[in-house]
Amino acid sequence: MSERWLGTERRSISGAERRHVLGLVFPFVTAASPRGVELERAFLQLAYAARRLSHRTSEACGYFAVVQQDVYAAVQRLHSRYEAGDQVRLVFHGLLVADMMRLTEAAEIASRSDDRSLLRAVAHEIAFETLYRDILSREPGVVERRSDSMPFGVDWDFYGTVPVVPAPSLPASGSPRRPAL
Image (cartoon, rainbow, N blue to C red; front, side, top):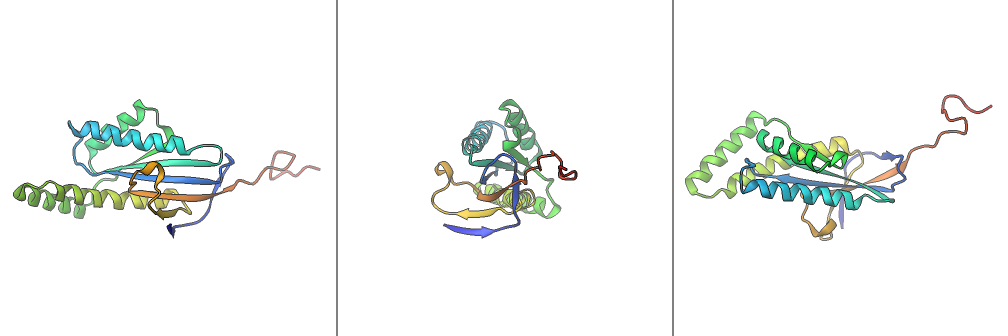
């Protein structure tokens, strides 16, 4: 298994020893049918994995990244419908001018060649860059895991773990500022 160290430690009050971090990119620029079904399936897959990986000795969080505002609105509705809470975080940041130009260029080439895979590949790359930055900022100490043994056999766009350090316990008086006399 190869690892990449990406930050500092994380503290937990839940007693968990590690935190699983899963990332999934939805690289399509529309949530219209039949993409709506695919969007829901991908979201549920991530939510299920995050829920199942959370137990007494570990926590889990999934990150779901999209590139378009209408897709983000659709995934927000799914997040609410399935009550995903903090176990699934949605990642969407307005596209930079350079990203919009890349997508426009890819769309033009895709329409001329009648091959939509180029547009999907560029959208995936843009969404992954956003996903990666978001995970790094929210998950201090995450160690990216690149191996054949991904959770549930899914080829996640990002999988990592964070060693969790137990939060310091309070003194008997109940306050760290007022020691018991």
